[in-house]
Length: 120
Image (cartoon, rainbow, N blue to C red; front, side):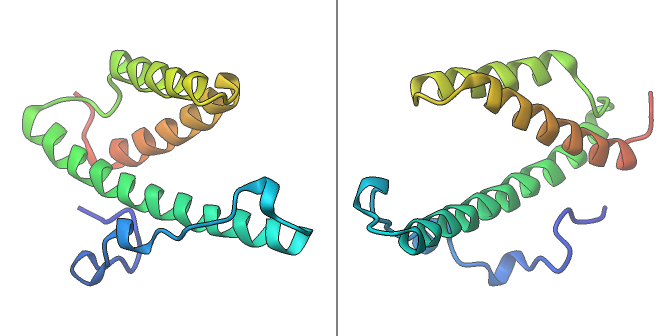
């Protein structure tokens, strides 16, 4: 099975938790340069989390194939979206924004899985 992350080397990866950096709170950023640095650092963290999520999607392909399951399991899609929206609300973030992002991310993941999993 192909890897979702071209050039990925799981054995050479450092733990994401060790790579996370501490940033100033937004209100402590004195200028746009500091603010942009913090946003860029957040973007790096987001990409690393997406990389980690992709590893789990790779594993899902293997497990779904072994169990004869399809790539898309709609009840699970809706569960994932609902979970993300609940977290967004709890964190004071617009759940509609999160739903849009999550649906795109989940659709991409399912498309990736569907290339590897034969239709039943």
